[in-house]
Amino acid sequence: MIEIEEKVHSILNSIDEFIHEHYQEYLQEAFEYFWEEERPEDILHGMMFEAGELNFEDWLIIDYRNPYGESFIDLYEKYTELSEEELTILKALRSSTISLYEVQGQRGDKTILKDLLRDRTIEVRIPLMAGLRHGDIFATRLIEFKGEEIKGGEVVMGRCIYPFHPSLKDRVLKYLDMQFKRYLKNENPGGDINTFLKDASTVFNTVWITLMAGETR
Image 1: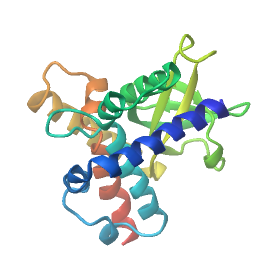
Image 2: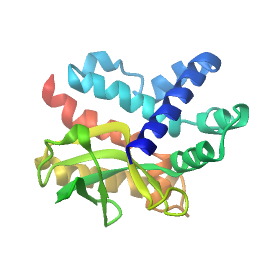
Image 3: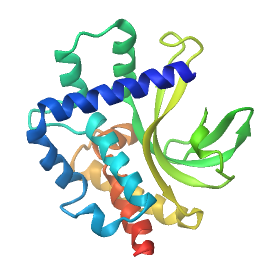
Image 4: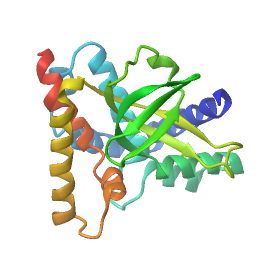
């Protein structure tokens, strides 16, 4: 597990360097879109600001689309010589989505999470979040590998983290449901929850700032 996690994060670092070396012209547009033309330093402080920077980086690498509809994963794959294993990792990154999770408990060295938007449970090692307690909720990206791709199948947590107070659970779910219905009505009538989570992933940043950052000002 540690090996595949290190490889995932190594590729994320490589894509980040690729973006900054070759595609500076897209960065300001992406930054303004993600932050809705706000300055994050004006609304986030301390650890929340640091998390916000990682959240933007995660979205930029994986979910952002340039004016031609290409992601940076697409461009990195197009212009970089890659091994089969690296292509497998890019495939998992490309299909990954952010969702909202609630901590259900612990099994061995894995944390049991309930996906509150897709009604499923999933087990993942979260070494940097050992202080999690039952009932904690947060949004993050889980990168899932099937058994035929990585022996035994694995789940790797991405870099983004949008923590919410457990007391805000109903409000977060209500906001996300409202945005999902708006997405189906106005953007993709044939879509579903998975296309919504991929196409509208900045919704997590918006609700996080609205409900959490306001409390720290």
